[in-house]
Length: 204
Image (tube, rainbow, N blue to C red; front, side, top):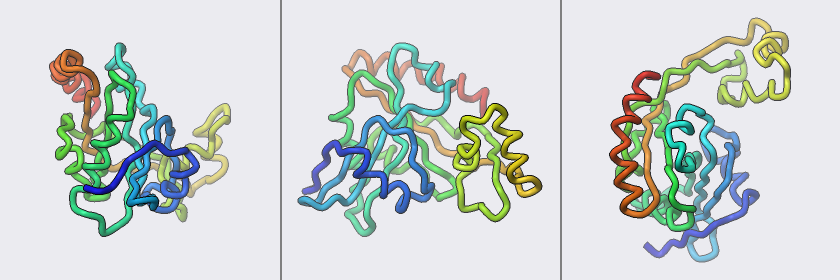
């Protein structure tokens, strides 16, 4: 494949996440990469710290990052996404653990992760989001973000939106893990998947 991948600045991916990704919000970002066709930026991918403290605590000896956004232009060759993800690995610090999700509400199954040998660990935990009638285009996390900095965030939302505020079950996601490191580190972590699955199964 003739495309090239290289690190990019946060500002270079901001518009992609707000306008092209279905969530239309910017996640926590620590690493950002661009997919280029010559000098033309045709895709972006980012990694950041996962929101789940449970996941972070499962790997006390390794830094955990979530592949939290992956967006490319339409009508690119079939294997472009898996190629893009695989190429970003060479730029990431090591050893680290990566996690990513495939959103069932978008009919995503994680074929990209399967093609790059990520380890499947089932569906994410059930979770309820706060939503607002008439603002269903906003992600539940975006609604809750409105209360950031308030002493009682839930009460602030109730006071602001009244009867328009309601709760809705968040679509569950397929969860995948990948380990970046030497052979010994990979072997140790892959063996730990059994423990990981048991821990995560309690939250499903």
